[in-house]
Length: 161
Ligand SMILES: [Zn+2]
Ligand SMILES: [Zn+2]
Image: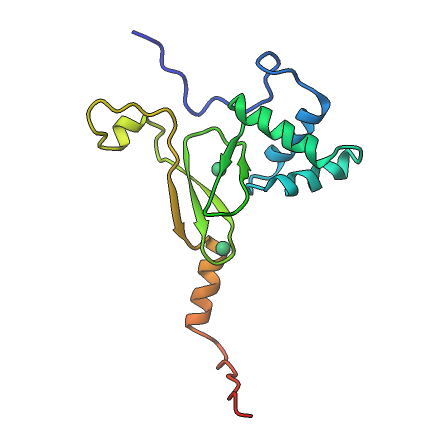
């Protein structure tokens, strides 16, 4: 019997061997790990540039490509928006907030392989799963509930000219 890897024990840390660790790659990776808000490449660039003023946007794109190709980082695509990046390697879905556009990680209660979650058609193999939800993030949800029960009546402009 093969030993099962401990699902929650693997922290996503920059590997010493699989890809060459350059200073820029490390800085890009650290920026993604520091805030899990799924930044775009330009947002990553702004964050890294703050610490490493000499870095260019092209270098950040290259680093993100290398990190994605090596499986350390996932791209998150939503409609026609520019790709965003996620360094959370635990199996999770994404909630796209239809109000503010934020992306929230939705973890599984218990990490398990896709064939235990989904009723897969026979003969199908899954290389990667990308599950997305649309809805409201907790901030927008509580804001919309406040609006539904306003404490003060909203002043509506008559629009008369
Ligand atoms: Zn994510
Ligand atoms: Zn929101």
